[in-house]
Amino acid sequence: MSTTTLNLGSVLPEFNLKGTDDKIYDSTTYSDFNAMLIIFSCNHCPYVQAYENRMQMIQEDYRKDNLLVFAINSNDDSQYPDDSFESMKIRSKEKEFNFPYLRDKDQSIAKAFGATHTPEIFLFDKERELVFHGKIDDNWQEETLVKNSYLRNAIVEMLKGESISVPETFTIGCTIKWKVN
Image (cartoon, rainbow, N blue to C red; front, top):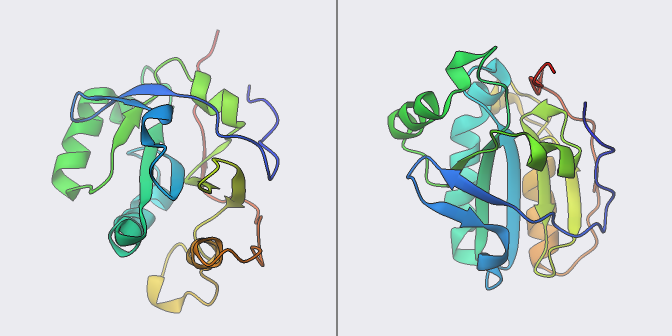
């Protein structure tokens, strides 16, 4: 169902999506931010659930560096009701997300990115070019056992103007639940 995943250096695909706060978020509105992190996410995936606190900590730790996190849920909610917009609102409130949680109901944004999994990470620099794609770290189950913090390392290197030492990793998690035509 998905297109080919974005290559490193690709420009951020435009999006205009509704968040769980009922605001519309447009990718072009945030040009003053030094970085934009897009995380394809959902409510029901155990991988996402295991990473939710880490996602919030990344936003918290790098907010001062003008990094903005967006989580985007593209799952088909007719097959997976836990991923409905109303359920997203509940989850966002319960978990006190400190980033916008957006609904991609028609799945066009997931297709534009070539996203295939939740969580799947796309980090864009100030010029909105893709500098990192993959997974957050090397241990989704036990945060205390993480040895390689791929995303955090990429953020630090990008903010310092350095080359990203590990710009891509394979993605892990649940597959995006595509609509059946």
